[in-house]
Image (cartoon, rainbow, N blue to C red):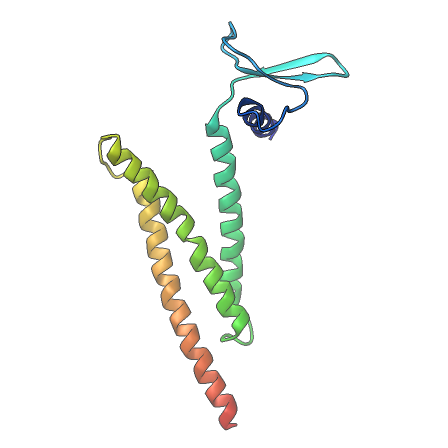
Length: 160
């Protein structure tokens, strides 16, 4: 967690968004470190290698934490007493839209790979693109079924 926070602070300092306190970006350090955090009370110094990989790793972890929370809410829909409600339909729509984030990002990564003439093979990006596309298609089908079920339930309530 500290490495993530240090990387964010270094990113802020590197691009001069504002002067982050106790953070120094080093130029051509002998030991290969390119950032350091000074701890003022104990006069300690933490040197580390700044990397965007750490930031992206934590962002993906955050995304999939949210994703699985919404997936939990998706499965809760099927154990509720009333199935075809507006609340259930909204939960399905949120999960449907959330599946497009990895689709868009991975499509961008694949296109960047094609532009840079990288070898095309079945790797993570294609797998994630395929899986999230299939999930989005299934969720779209559920949304359609829920809309029709909600309409039938409203018609049934009117006749009773």
